[in-house]
Image (cartoon, rainbow, N blue to C red; front, top):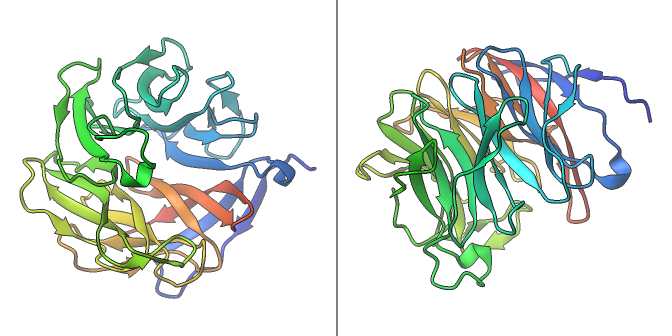
Length: 314
């Protein structure tokens, strides 16, 4: 297979504010490689992401044009959901390297890896606070029966110092609560929550519970359902200006998500991306000019995906 970089210009909806170029990293479809959770460094010089091209998910960086690929981690277990610290000097991530899903940090070259969490129950999806002093993450540590299916576990949100100390529980929803992030001004919390309301799974099959995007104040008050749709809504992230982008399959096409922009008060919903593709696991650059995401191709039998970058003007 040709391992050279392929650039594909995407067709856009007339109403879209995005102009995009598609960047596919080299992958072998025979093993259904997935390159996912891309994030541009604060200085704009490096893209961080996870990939299973080695057989398990490891962490990589590359230049924004897809060159200079570097593997940061290694081993026979998964590493995933990596994020830059606001100053670009550290990377936080999740891994099962110690027999349980835990949170870690490391230097940007993969050195000085440090384990931060040490409890039973999976810990995952770390994000730095805007000032870089704390990490917010989700954890199943309070689940009564950790042998239960993850969809029945109590996955709550917690914060801790960047050295793992001073752990504080933020939510007590007793449901699946994931993908947390703190607003740029530090006052609000964004997350995905599964609620007991009929909805649709990612494949558009009917479900007894529904995945929605929520926002609330950091003290737990003012909780609001932003997505408020029976579709599968998830992967919410902040823009630097305090707006929100999330992915949803409300277009009604199995295994296809589109990116939507919404104000933090729930108004101004706008679809950003072309329904001929599926976009998930996105992030917004610190200058607000680019959205990085996975262009996902999926069915019940397989999944693979490349990294896409979109120029973005709100």
